[in-house]
Image (cartoon, rainbow, N blue to C red; front, side, top):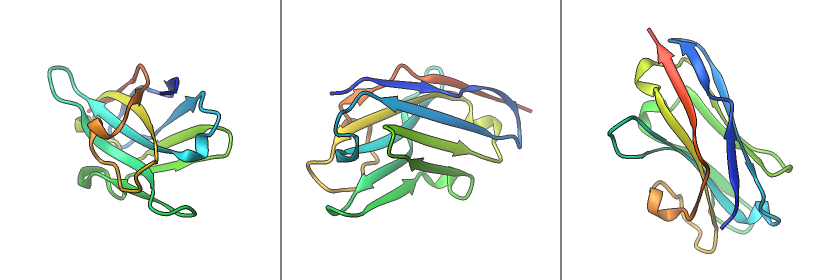
Length: 128
């Protein structure tokens, strides 16, 4: 369990771009799988993207189908994970959450239940 803080949300017109950031307190940041989820009011939290370790030396990025080709998840070596969002659509509107879990089991983590640490969320609103 680690502390996560998201930032970078805001209001943008359809077709615009935003970059979300997730800062973590994890001392062993490289040992964690990271994910981005989003939730619209009254709806369930849904998977957006993940960086998941699949071996001791390799990780993969995976995305939900609706954001493929538009969103990119990446990380640096300063305990930060990012979600670059391009060509935004109104249906992308929601609260975006960063999530983390220790990669003790190497798998692509697309389920919210796979993560045990969550940030407070950052609002993304895409207008028409």
